[in-house]
Amino acid sequence: MRKIFILLIGLSFSISLSGEKSKVNISSAISDDNELKLPCFFKNNLIYLSAKLSNNDSLTFYTDTGGKNFLYTIGLKKLRIKNTTENLWENSNIKAIFTANNISFPKKAEIYSTKAKGVIEDGMLGREWFADRIWRINYKRNFLSEITNIPHNEFEPISSLYFLKDDKKQVINHLPRIEIVIKNDTLSFLFDTGAQVYLSDAAQEQMNDQSLTAISFISSSIFNSWKTSYPEWEVIKKGDKQYKADIIRVPEIKIGSKIIGPIWFVKREEQNFEVMSRRFMDKQIVGAIGGNALSLLGDIIVDYQNEKLYINKNYR
Image 1: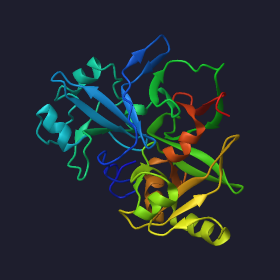
Image 2: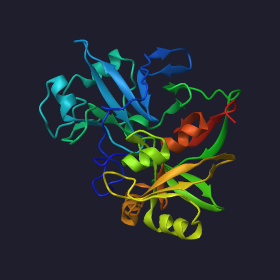
Image 3: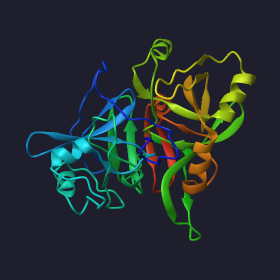
Image 4: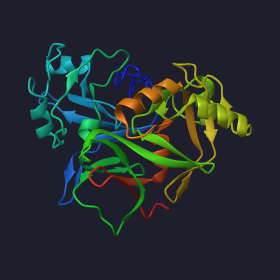
């Protein structure tokens, strides 16, 4: 989830792909009867989509289950579009670009321009793009794909996903909530593939990670409770370089039957989650679980249609 998603939230941050030393592999769109592998690359457990243009250039989209569909200034320039309040899906060639790259259209055919500062990618694909589909995210082999059927011989469900619905049980907001157990407490989190942080130099050294990396978020009250109750848990003061927030190392968390860890959580103010919960979620959340945790599951399927999270049985 990015800062521009909802200005009130401020959970995530502007991204930079420059200056990182991690290896980047770009996969092409590959299709078979059940699975469409998308042209993407992974960097520090964050996922980017790359769409080729006719002039041998490309558009890079940051993908984020907690975000929205946007074109940034750099992307607008590549497409020779002026910044506008209009829906660019119908007023640009973005639709043709998606078609040419075998990339699925968003459920809600909308993408808007925004003046995002400090970003070098061309846009974002968020919750409307992920909505109502079945996605496979393989963090081990670094690919994202859309599938039509669950291969039950390979995958098993480990958790439910929850969405805000109307009186007729129809989903009205496509931000997924997931329940996670930490120290016998069942807590609700946003399922957030785009959660990220810029680490301070000290945090990079202690976490053995890059400057910009996937992270998970936790509310200030839970953070403070953990810090008091478990003084042995490592805390990096002002480990978040941009917001000067502390980061805490949780030894393990439980998603369904799967125990993973350690997981780093960065502290965020309470009102961020209160506002988000009130407006967009079916229940109060206390944080966001990001790619630093999800990647430890190895190979997952996020089933928006049946509201379930699956894990590859071979990654136990």
